[in-house]
Image (cartoon, rainbow over all chains, first blue to last red; front, side):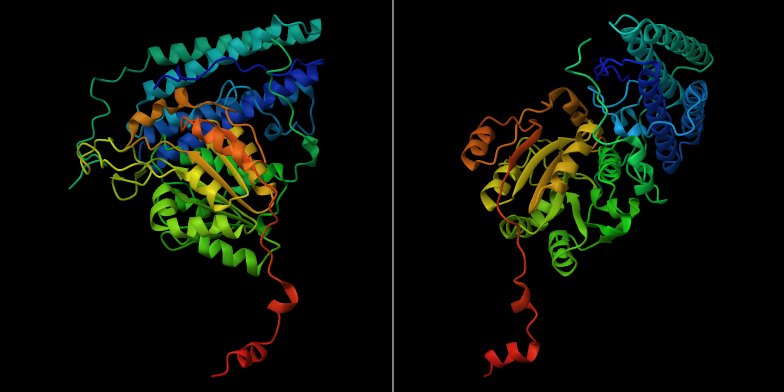
Length: 179
Length: 287
């Protein structure tokens, strides 16, 4: 449950303007926020309220990032995130459905979040180093710095959460039990 | 970083999207196990419907029985959660009665290849204009992990120690030889790629069959490795059956993409004859 199985090389088409670049950033945040909300619902359906609340909180945080981008760009009608596709199966900051376990603990959820934020850093760093207009490079550096700050905050959060005990996924009444 | 392998804006202006993917999901929350591949199908189906700007009232999602067959409840379109293995029969009837609807039939490998196996053959043969999405996890998940038609012969489990020893059902081979007009394979770990395949399947005339590799993390946790085994875009579409057959001979079972896009015209009821009064028809069968 680390997210390490997937590629970290989402590479969008090189943007020619800051608006194009920020549309990618916006799409990334929308996908991340929506996915965290879905994961919160999944955990809630399985009565894992602690992790459900945590995913809901992460969704709200990503939603704030999304709104900050829209405000910064003064978009009255933000670009529709659904019109983007990535070279990787999903957006750089989107949690893979397959990484969940119904008995997972907050530590696991935060590790996933840390992985996602790190991917976002790498995503923006690639733009900052790409052959794009200077204004786009500058915006990419700024976004990468924001994401680095998110990584730092998640790590601070992680430090306060106990890691799981061995056997955390043991279910005394397992669904796979054959009567 | 190059332009060729990049995320690209999809066709059409964002402003033209009347609805977002979320508008195609209902308020009913899925009860699948966290980590289930079927979440990726709901996500991809909603994205595809948004991309095609379909009106939810013009879409019917029909299913049989099983974990994956819960999908109609999770969509905001019309839905019919039917009888085990009979989703294709219900979908066929619906499409013939209401050709204006976009009919999407969904289900799992047990429902579609075993209980409904005969319907699968004849749906391919009839070539009615609808889409069939099978979420294949190679196990009966809802009933606690029995081997399904696509389980590997040596899959060892409590319910089939040392495996069944039975050769797997070959859905793509059967679909091709039975006459399906569009055949593809997708993976739930790639919801965006899957959304594109669903869109192509729905847009293609005739019977479109889309097999989706959808891991069951509860009864087949080893399937989490599928994301390392799939081969995106391994198939390239062809309208020639012999070429598609050759591709299937090399198929690893994890090759993704469109295998076959045929040109056979979809089934259409012969209008005026179908509308003759019942009395006139009965007269032909007078004893």
